[in-house]
Image (tube, rainbow, N blue to C red):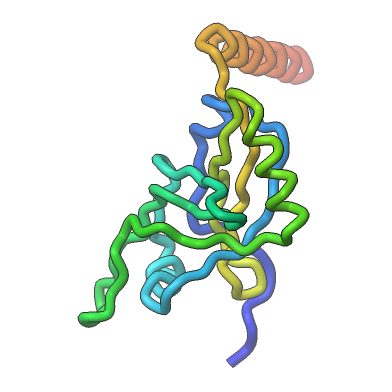
Length: 156
């Protein structure tokens, strides 16, 4: 059986970039059980309520929903269990130092397979205020309208 190549995205947290200002991103491996991996390979996961925290020198992923594997037996996993993330010690120290500052949080952006191994992209983020969200939407709309106007002018 050939080894998987490339990157296969399983789940993306699209609201994260809207609700948070992303400061730094990290790629981490995850400690998973066999049924969790099978469920992820079927493309089933949700990062919506997920967050990560540093506890006793380790990073843990909380609130990520990986549904139970349908063909699983009595040793099936629970869907919202706490999962350990695999990072280098210097990365954990850097994250822990930044999290001590007020208003910072650690959120998952993407869950994917990289060359057959389950990875999660986590981001050090700061919550946006309501007016920041409105301004970002307005900028996106203005850019879309300008692009539309330029394409209409090019077609004439």
